[in-house]
Length: 207
Image (cartoon, rainbow, N blue to C red; front, side):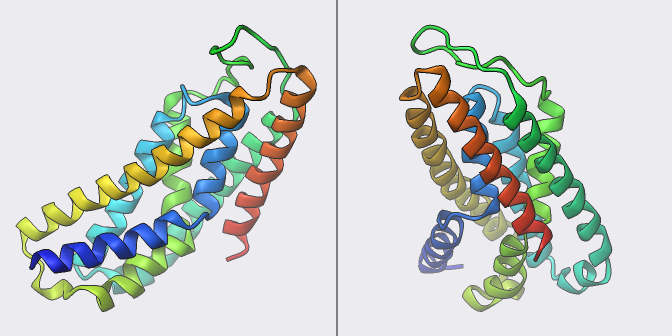
């Protein structure tokens, strides 16, 4: 692939991933409600999920993905169920205001593995991401001509673009969270975050 091909791919991915969707909504809601400290597994899982879709597209496994569509549907609804559970936990969580710069609410008990699974399920079951890699990507680059070196570069570009976008959303959400210094404000933020998380689950389930 020529350098222009990678640039076109990066721009297309930037536009597609940068537009808020269910995955971003879930990520932002989680940070506002619980802080940024425990979202790393969720972030990594989102990136792994995107690399899986990229690999399927380049390997020409779109037809296989269609054949085993029920697997992705099952993963999608497992992810939806977990997002709904997180939304409930956010809605009902107790409020505890601590010193400036520290987390304002206790941990919900969501371990790294469960957070990783949630991010992976949301990404693999997100129709917006499926459409980009299995439908739009073949119109952007010649997948049949992609070499192993090209795939490595595309994977690197994918990780860089996604990291820039997702970490940017995390930083913005964390700044919003810092402004919430009263129990009432935190309670409202938790309820709003729960509503957003629930809406993200509903959006994924309905597509």
